[in-house]
Length: 519
Ligand code: NAD
Image (cartoon, rainbow, N blue to C red; front, top):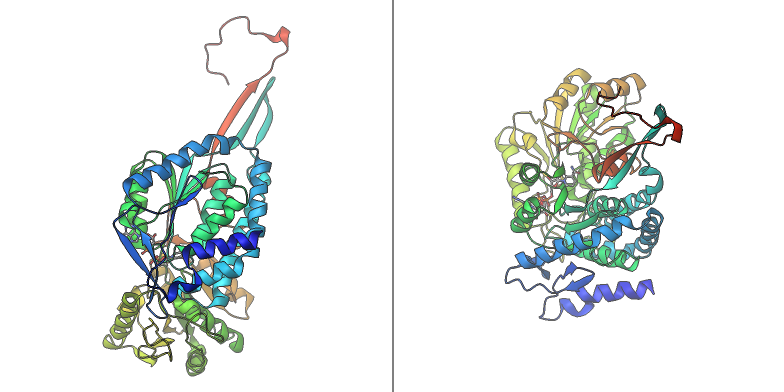
C-alpha cells in the first residue's frame, strides 16, 4: 500500500514522461491535508543542476494561500495538542517506517533537484530519519519536573507544553534532513507546523509531507507554502506563528532572526560556516588525507559542515602533494551516474561565484594547486560542475579565506605550532564545526578545550552530532539560544507551565486571609 502511495506522489510531481513532454510538472501547496495547485501568477523554475533542464515549477504562494495555510495550522492546533502523547508518538513511529520504505524515492528527488550523488542523497534522508526516530522518544523527552512537599501539603510540578503554530524555512543543500530537523520535533510536542522548503528543492519535502499524512498526521497539522522573500516576510510577521526555525545563509538568517524576534517570536537560526581541519604531523597520514578529501569535496562542498579549510601544522605541510593526488582522483559526474563522487553546484550563479572566489585567491597571491574551474563532464556539458580545487599559501586576509565558498574548494593554511592554528580558528567569525587530526590525546584534548567552535571532531572530519545531542554551531554560525533537535530541540518547541498545588486536610483550613508574602 505504501509503495503505491509513493508512486502516486511521484507521478504528481515528476511523472516519468515529464522530461520528454512539453508540460512541466508543478509543485503543489499542502494546505489542510490537501495538495492543491497554487493560483499564483509568479512561478520559479526548478532545474536539474547536472543539465540545467527545467524539471518543475514551484509557485510563489499568494497572500491568500499563505493565510489559508496558517489558518489551517491554527485550527488543527487545539485537537493535536490535546491528542495523547502516545498517539502522537504512534504517528511518528509509523512515519519513520514509511521514510525507510521510501528512502530511495526521496533520494532520487534530491539528486534530481539538488544534484548530489544518489548515495549522498540517501545519507541526507538517513540523517533526517534519525531525528524522526529520536522524536519517537518524546515520552521521555517531554517529561516535566516535580518537587513534592515544598512546604506543608504543597507540591510543585512543571509541564512542557506546545507553543502553537511553528514555522520552518529551509536551505537547498539538505532537502530532506533539514526539514526533518524541524517539523517532526515540533509536531511530536503537539505543535502544528508551517513549512517553507527551499524554492530550489521542494520535491523531497512534498513527498515527506505525503508520507506524514499516510502515517496518520491529521489534516492541518503540517502545511506547506512555497516562495522566497514574500513568504519569509509573511512568516516573520504573522501574529499566529510563535516560533521560527531557520537554516541557511547569514544574509537571510540574520534578517529573519531580527525580524522574527522583533515580532515576539522565538527564532533559532543555523547559518554559514568556515570549518577548519587542523592536521598535526603526528596524525595517521592515510586516514587524515582521506578524511580531508572526503569532507572538503563530498556533496561538492555544499555542506555547512564541509571541512573547507585545512591548517597544516609543522611537518604536515609536506603532505600537500599527496592531498592533491587524492583529490584529483575523485570522479565528478551527474549525481545519478554510477561511481560519481561529487555532482554539480546548485546553479550557474553558484558556479560563477565559486570560480570568482578561486580567481580572487590567485589574484591575492595564493597558489592554485588543483584547479577545477574548467572541468567538462561528458554528456553533461551544461551542468554547473566545478572540479575539486585546492588553494595553498592562503592567508587569513584573503577573500577566499574570509568568505564561505560553498563549493568543492579546499583552502590550505600553514602554521608552525598548534597554538597558531588555534588562534586562526578562533579569530575566524564562524563557529560551526572543526576537526583536529592527531594521534596524541593531550593535543586533541587541548584543541577541544581551547577552540571556540560549537562542534569539534577528533579524527572525525564532519562532527555533526547525532540527534540525542543537539546541533551546536556557535558564534556567527548561529543566532538564538536554543539549538536544533535533541533536548534543546524539545525546549525550543515547548514552553513550561509550573503548577503549585496545595491539598490540605480539612482541619488545616486557613482561619484568616494570608496577606504576607508566603515564605
Ligand atoms: P539561503 O539563505 O539562500 O536560503 C535559505 C532559505 O532562506 C530559503 O528557503 C530561501 O528561500 C530563504 N531566503 C534566501 N534569501 C533570503 C533573503 N534575502 N531574505 C529572506 N529569505 C531568504 O541559503 P541556501 O543557499 O539555501 O543554503 C546555503 C547556506 O545555508 C550556506 O550558508 C550554509 O552554510 C547554510 N547552512 C547552514 C546549516 C547549519 O546547520 N548551520 C545547514 C545547512 C546549510
